[in-house]
Image 1: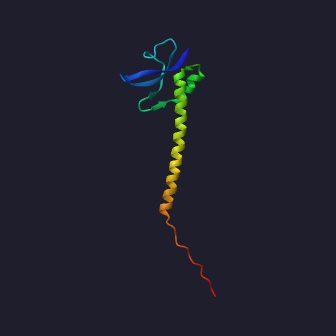
Image 2: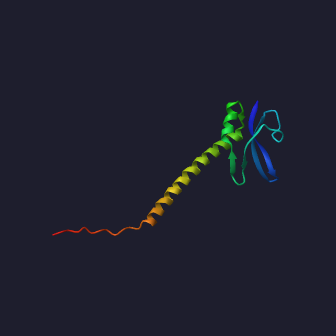
Length: 113
């Protein structure tokens, strides 16, 4: 049976983790089938190959509880980052439009008598 789990890497007191697929009976520090990404808890950086994770889950791999929570957090942050970038971009465009086009003086209508 396959499992998706985290394998500890990095220096002492500065751990980083690799998300890997391996046989349930094997040691996570040893040989594994595939590397699916990394997570650095100190800088909160993470990069996962979500397509490959979905592939392995569909083929019977079980996710550990820690991996499950980490993926949920990663998906939420990804959505929030996309939304906030869009809002900032729209606000920036509005400010630029206001600066580029100064208010034009009103034209007086000519009235013929």
